[in-house]
Figure 1: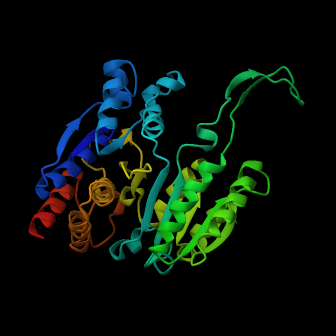
Figure 2: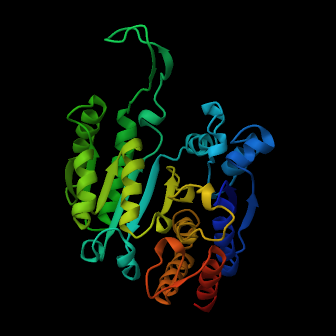
Figure 3: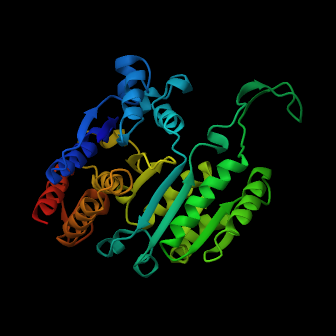
Amino acid sequence: MKIAILPGDGIGSEIVTEAVRVLEVLDLRFETESALVGGAAYEAHGHPLPDSTLKLAQDADAVLFGAVGDWKFDSLERSLRPEQAILGLRKHLQLFANFRPAICHPQLTHASSLKPELVAGLDILIVRELTGDIYFGQPRGRRLSPDGAFEGQPEAFDTMRYSRPEIERIAHVAFQAARKRSKRVTSVDKANVLETFQFWRDVMIEVHAQYPDVELDHMYVDNAAMQLVKAPKKFDVVVTGNMFGDILSDEAAMLTGSIGMLPSASLNAANRGLYEPSHGSAPDIAGKNIANPLATILSLAMMLRFSLNQPEAAARIEAAVTRVLESGLRTADIWSEGTQRVGTREMGSAVVAAVAAA
């Protein structure tokens, strides 16, 4: 089996390097191949997702992805910006379901921005639809306003849309995931003002009829954002659209102590997937040996479990991360009094040692 390694920009190369070291110590003998993506690919090839990189990803059984983006590319035409690489990979690999588990490790309750009693034992799974919504809807562009109070003035527009099959398939994913957990799904929408999400809610209710053993409730996105910080443990599985999921999953990440702890899996119907940390490229700290590699290492564990049929190896990695946290090692983003601050490389080495000792 083959793994495509796409480090990307900023801290991407540092954190992916540590994950690859963990993979190597497992000695699973997967074939790996690396390629440029994002801003690094644009500088080398003139496009953030070169044909060679896309072909590598399409031919691989799984993709380990770092992060893309840098402020120096913000002036580029939108189609050439680094972030278009991840959108292109989602589209071409048909990665429609994003899983983001937000788990607060017992050792990190004091690193959370919320009171320890609110996040102790936190275990939320956010299921985000990835290929529809306003991020991909057409038409979009800029024009002179054809009507309204500012007719004739420059305006920009995007299109929010979802088809029935898109909603049905992400609904099935969420309900099936809930069956393996606490059997509760919260569907997040904005049905009170958006026709797209009234349709979303209608289809969710229809699909729910096939899962009578799973509880379904609905929540407007503004209320969901509030409840995530007020009473986060009331959630089990949260399913929502592309844009709302983008925002809520980052909010949930901070409940865990740091977005540097939140892994992510994006899967297609065949369980082939792209695995990446939920955080960005953080160019301001790139090359300084201070980035947290644990989200990427935990994403590697998800890859082994979901796409490569190696659940035992995945469990070894997750147990190793727990042991490292229990030992008191912390990168800067999760450091607190009484713990030992270490760098990216040192944290990666600690996980490698813990995996090897298991």
